[in-house]
Each structure stands twice: as C-alpha cells, then as structure tokens.
Image (cartoon, rainbow, N blue to C red; front, side, top):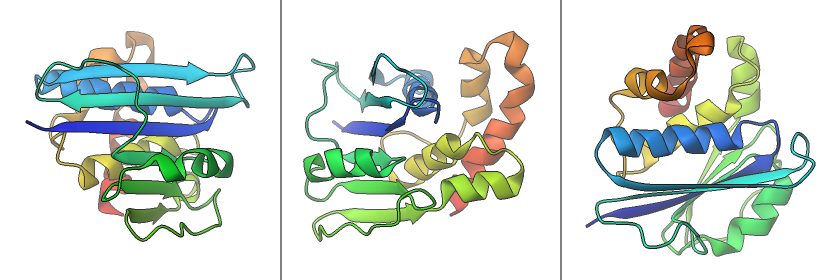
Length: 177
C-alpha cells in the first residue's frame, strides 16, 4: 500500500492548480485513489495559491495534507510556509529561478530546478509549473511516467488542445533535469 501526499504552492497565476490537477488525473488514469484540493486567496492571480494532491493505492480518508511527502515550492513565501511540514525523508522541489535560498534541513531531499528560466529558454514561459510536475513524476514512485499525453487529453478542453504537445515538452524538461 502506497500513499503519496503532494503539496504544490506558489502565487496565483503560476499554474499551481493546473499542475496539481494534472498529477491527480495521472493517478486516476492509473486507477489509483486520488484527492485534489485547491486553495487560493480571494485575490487569485498574484495572491497565494496551493493545492494538495493525494495519490494512493487505498481510499483517501481526507483531502487535507498536514505533512506532505513532496513539497513543490514555486515562490519564497510558499517555501518558508511549508518547508518544515515536509515529512523526514520527504522531497522538496524548488523553482530556483524564483527562490535563491537553500533549504537547511538535512532530513529531506531537495531538488533545485530553475523551472521559470527553463520555460523561458524553451519558448513557453508560462509552463514552469509543468516542468516542476515532470520533476515530481521522476522523483516519486506514486505515479508512473507513461501516459502523459493521454492524461492531458483527458482534462484539457478541446479549445486548448493545441497546448497538449507543449505541456508534454515541459514535463519532459522537468523529468530530464
């Protein structure tokens, strides 16, 4: 029985909720039990945003995560707020383009991914979230890597189908980092 609790946090507009929804759908496609719980301030774009994703082999009792196995921090306030909540042995994935501090904890594994710069360099500046999601897929055994395109096709609206391939490229960049 495996359960992975993922907390993705940043500013509204960074795609925090979209990345979480993608990971939740990945779990669904792979016939896992999932929970996706978005949380954002009233100001939305530019305000705080985070989402909790639980992917499990057994039914999820509560969508609330207090001790994440994986933290994805897309800005410094989010890292500062949640860094101490990550379980010992957990993983922290940081957008090092926007966060220039190092994590002091020695009981977690930390990955510094310059996702925002990587997205800019690749020509899809708004997809740092999916680069980080690709890194999550690489660093967790809760969800398999295969089937990304099919997962995106399942929940991206038809009018935005042209964005599926670029999202796949962003995922691959994160996975390869």
